[in-house]
Image (cartoon, rainbow, N blue to C red):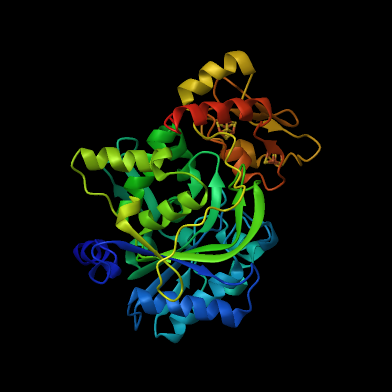
Length: 406
Ligand code: SF4
Ligand code: SF4
């Protein structure tokens, strides 16, 4: 991994930007751009990244969370995948498109088909779930990561996340998309062992460091706010956000959500580790990031108007426990009119808190509020309560300046 470490240590733009990480916010003029416009934008990103793809295996890692159609904007836009595949191919690279879908879904081919990503891969789709390796880790919450072998073999990784809110991690962008390195059922095991936001943030950081992607191109044609990453509110934005430093990219996305990165547990953990003498795998402070437009001009980060934060933000597991006494429950609630009794939620629940009778029944004593069931239910039948609870969460969050996440 020596070459890899060297290659990934610093963003390529360092020399030109005085030690700062460059993040490009590229306006495409609308959420459904002409393919030629999208391709020009991708080519611009690849040119500025200064990467040589010739004769190199290049993994494109989209978000293929669940078998949901592209018009739901849960998974990476096929148009973005296609533009990047073709650009890499035309530059002499050997592209491969792959991801591990969420939960116990092992059939990544079917998921890729439904999401439109299989067709967009232009014959370069690769089933990442077929070969996995066990990687020992010093992560305090697991002794090993079981990941797709090709994650370690690919000479270049281009990360293609979607800009979405997330009930557990607040944001899903560059770093969270790397949770897809983990194969199938092992995701549930990790959710269970790292059951709070703080622990899960540390685990994400450790996993990200296993193989830091070389480039991140975030699909923000349509973004998701509210209770993402599956059943939030899809909104048109018409942008790509790109850079070689995933932490810097995520810091910019966080600011676009209207938050300071230090209000998010993940960045708090990065800062804690930095204070303890551990070098972070990227930059996240505003003063260490240059935000540029497609022409390379410095621009201000523009928050997305009325960005709806997840109703779970700012609430620690301990606070949730206290809230239970007064609010009843913040566990997901089954909407029986939408439920098709498929049992996917039961299969994907890390602590096994769900039984079917005939609809899902959640054992509140076992539930760890990870929201995997809501994330992976394709019918939208697992609802995370809002209303009274969300209002209280929101007040707590504002009072605590967002420091209250567990
Ligand atoms: S809540 Fe969703 S995942 Fe669970 S059984 Fe019903 S439809 Fe299936
Ligand atoms: S019931 Fe849902 S939120 Fe609770 S632990 Fe299971 S998957 Fe997570």
